[in-house]
Length: 300
Ligand code: DGL
Image 1 (cartoon, rainbow, N blue to C red):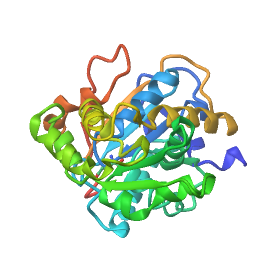
Image 2: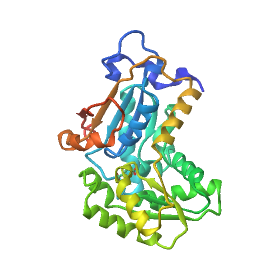
Image 3: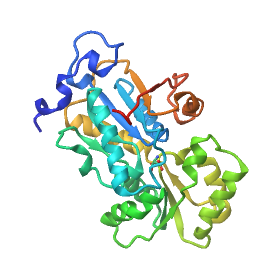
Image 4: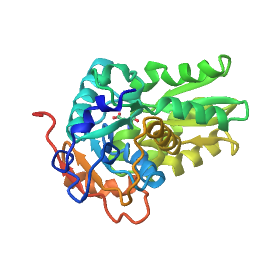
């Protein structure tokens, strides 16, 4: 692929907003653009920052319009295109769609003629689940839109057409998580209700098919223990996505050689309200707080 065709080539300190950068700027200095409907994608951004500490990162959480998972495919794609367009204006070298709901609609409609590499979360998650499973059934927990798309089942069946996949929509999880209700009895009871259909199943692997859900890992592990038994493994695709990000950057000759990556975090609404929760999604060592900047995409 012609690297000179990438939109990011014309990027400068000003356009990327990464004002801490000094010296000669090259294409590989451009940021990795990452977005989600809200804060859940920070679980992916954090895994990427951990694996690629030298990379610049621009994160966008569309907190004005979260949740996406209850909306129609056309609306999800429309919102996602706005997010991509904002990230492109920050001078990025690739896009990581850190949202299952958007990834499940396919990435084709987002590129909009750009040659930037795009990476979604479905395939890395499906591959990790197949690798982790010992041959039992695989369950996928996701938003309504993700489950309705069948994206995980299709990705799993591409590799193993006969593997049994149970899909469960868990629409109440995202609002609970965005509220920071991670360890409480209401959340636990809701998890019990959602996971009840897995009783007596042969499930040995459960995919957290929403980038918010890793924050419920403790409760989900407990409830799966009760309902299915201790053999079940939980799959969080964040580390697999981080690995794929590195592979994709290397394939395009875009790995950043310098040290000290800069991170910027944007949300489309209520930075103050969500700031207290944001830190829980970010597990990179050494980052004391996630400083959220407000960007109004509704008028963008
Ligand atoms: N975190 C998102 C996902 O992975 C979206 C949740 C939502 O907005 O409904 O699907």
